[in-house]
Length: 328
Image 1 (cartoon, rainbow, N blue to C red):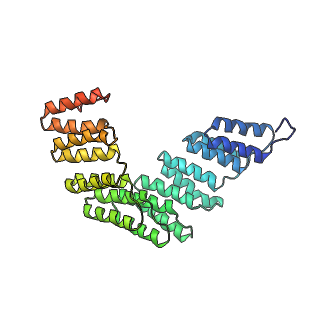
Image 2: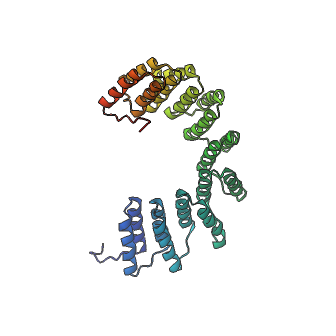
Image 3: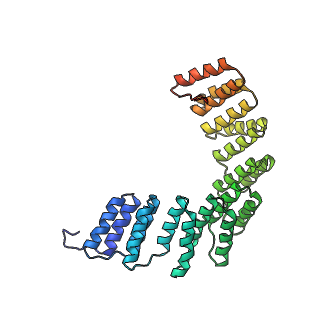
């Protein structure tokens, strides 16, 4: 371009800076930024925001703040994208209060937070168990006519589930349906996990039937959560029915699925069945891992069946798996 006597302008540099940033070549992007300055091409809000966002995504808070300071020095006002990037990185490093400070000062600077701004803060609050505060923000954005999207709902539902507020989470799922934003299987899995964790297994089973009726196809993770919940509640037979159904229907069950079933069998003292299932894993194209073996080995040791446990330890080591004793 320069060889043909065509001088790059701000648009050219911004495109190149953005290109380097999206492929993670921040060193090259920053070098271009300095080249712009040397060529007397003044970086604009887009240049700075792109760099701030890239450094934030890399987790480099210090450099992001340095770029922001340079931006201020040049008299260029940050936009919503710039502030969103900063809030996001502060939330990622669990400095939610600093993110909230930025959020609260946006209006003072003549900027209106958008749905992504709210989503970032709601997610940050949920991660530090401040779900009530997250719900307040959710209500605030609606009062300001900022329409929550699927990310907003999914984040809140996950936060509510992890805080044991399942009834509120279910209300939000119903609200999603009513406004034409149906939840996805990941959101449903959060709810299912909460139901199982709170020992509401009959509701969990009914919930899986409900989502299938709504046309949502449960994935292996869905069934893993349900099987694990059933096993831990002592409902091994129900868990076995679900597990066998998965195999019959051709689901690609994972090592995690088998490990859950092995643990369920061990909890009931059914070691022969657990060892038999361990053997069948490879026949079904699923290689046992350390957890597969150790679950049975530790259970056998607890029942003073040392000979059987030692045999499995030898088998495990022969397969190149490292056994770590709980006394180590």
